[in-house]
Length: 141
Ligand code: HEC
Image (cartoon, rainbow, N blue to C red; front, side, top):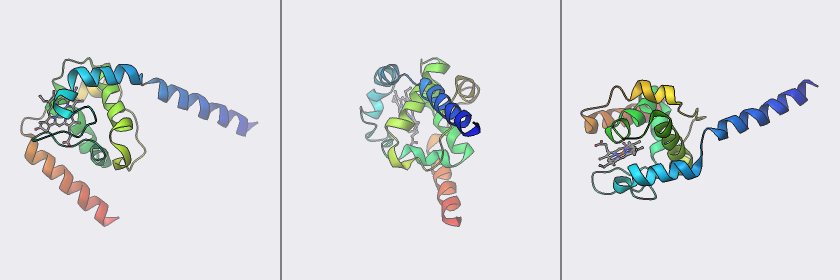
């Protein structure tokens, strides 16, 4: 019986987690607010870094996870907190590919609301530091 309950919970929990994302709406919002710079497939160009198969590396640390919300393109976008959370979750699921090396806990509207109040000013150096930190954590494992 316990196994059955656990199984039902698993199904329900998965349904709730998946329900956080409406892929059509997320992709539409990405098209309207992000892809002009980030390209439809997240490959970026010029000063815009490639998110495809890469952006998931930031999820390895708490500061990196926060960075994806605090980066100006996210933080100051016109999207609501809920829509931005959904777009970021969609990016992690659809664009980040195998660069996601952690069990990903989807962003909530509340988390996004809190983090986007602190947009980053100087991104390039902060980003380089984050990547160096993440690389050193991984080489210690
Ligand atoms: C006007 C161009 C522009 C738009 C629009 C834009 N971004 Fe960006 N984005 C950038 C640039 C440039 C960077 C590199 C960091 C920086 O200089 O801000 C970046 C970096 C990022 C990063 C971090 C990727 C990395 O490897 O450092 C994320 C996540 C991100 N943007 C998400 C978004 C989301 C989500 C949207 C739409 C809501 C968006 N961006 C809209 C230009 C843009």
